[in-house]
Length: 178
View 1 (cartoon, rainbow, N blue to C red):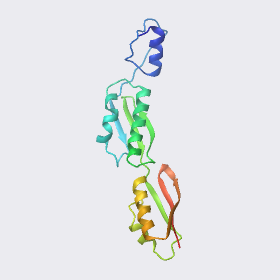
View 2: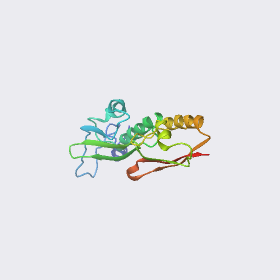
View 3: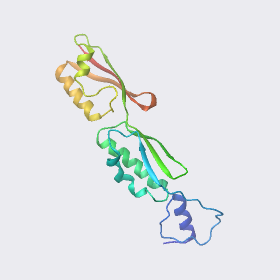
View 4: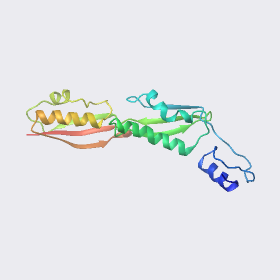
C-alpha cells in the first residue's frame, strides 16, 4: 500500500500492478509497451514448447524489465540443467509492435582437433565420441566421451575448451599421450 512515492518507485521498476495510487506526478506523458508476442531465436536442442512455461505470463502484459530478466535467467538455467553449459542469451529486442525477441546461442562446436596420437588415426577417435562438430556442446556428453576414451587409450585429456567466433564452442584438443 502506498501513495505517490511508492507508485513512482514501482513504475520506475516496471511494475504496473502494485498496490499504490499515483495521484500527483510531473509526468507529461507516459508510455507503456505491452508484450504482444514473445519469440525465441536460435533454440534447437530445447524446444520452444519446453520453454514457453517460463515466459507465457509475460505475453499480453506490460513490459517489465525485472520479469524479463527473471525469465532469461530461467531459460539459461534450463539449458544448464540439461548439460548445455555454454548456452547464453545473446540479445533481447523488442519492436514497435511489442514483439519481444530473445536470441539464444546454444554453444555449437565448430572445431575438434585431435593431437598427440601416434598409434590411432584421428577418424577412429572421432567416430567413437558423441561430441561432434556442428553439435551443441553438452557437459554430460563430454564426460561420457572422456570415460569411453579412458577405457580405450592410456592417457586422454581435454587440453582446452574455448569460445570461438560468434560465441560458438570449439574443443581445441583432445590428446592421446602414448
